[in-house]
Amino acid sequence: MKYIHIKRIIYSSLSLILCFSLAGFSQNPQKNISEYTFSEKTKWADEFNTSGRPDRNIWGYDLGGGGWGNNELQTYTDNIQNARVEDGFLIIEVLKNETEPTYTSARLVTKNKRDFLYGRIEVKAKLPEGRGTWPAIWTLATENNYGNNYWPDNGELDIMEHVGYDQNRVHSNIHTKAFNHVIGTNRGNNRIVDKASDDFHLYRMDWYPNLIQFFIDDQMHFELKKEEKFGWAEWPFDKPQYLLLNIAVGGNWGGQKGVDENIFPQKMEIDYVRYYELEETNP
Image (cartoon, rainbow, N blue to C red; front, side):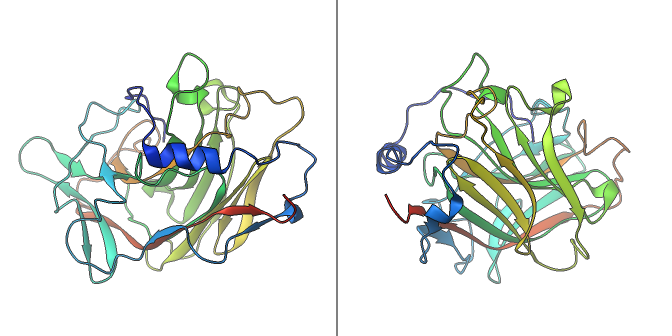
């Protein structure tokens, strides 16, 4: 999910504390991942056990339309009809309306609430289906630290992306200034996930200082290693990022084969979101 609409912000105190607490991690590209571990207990999580609006201590909203840099058709709202917790699940729902805007959806973000640097993020989700849907579970940089353009210079990590015209094929991607789809250098992979829209599946990212791995149902299907020659243009992933959950409609990718107007409403259901801190075994 390419994101262009952004304003430079000042870190919240939570982001500052997180940066300071992880500042001592080794940046040595040769450091083995066996020298790291993940905390056994979650640093933060949302099990979605309380009905109503999503927990405001964890989630905020990106709002508005305008295409979001991808010619998308939806307008994001903070309406409970588009994002709510019910029956133990977070529901993000796309609605087709009789009046403008034609499509409304939600884009939930943890920015300045649950930013994180390194660690394991897990999201158990059931995806929407149908031509024109474009759900994503992904991260963006909290701050504009590198280059002249927030995107792609500061990086994007796509834990899960799915386009409805290619049912059951799930993608994971990394975008940076050097590696992005606009210039044809994108790094990523995809795999078939049986019943992606009928059953819940676990989408996971393990983020180390020098390695990022992506998993579906605990099976790794893509990784990117930091090489000694990498600078920030290849690897801006040493600064905090935040999590986004959303469903787009149409757009440069999701709308490549048009939008089936008869499929709506469509939902992405989230069972839980869990974050585990990264720890060094021999600091």
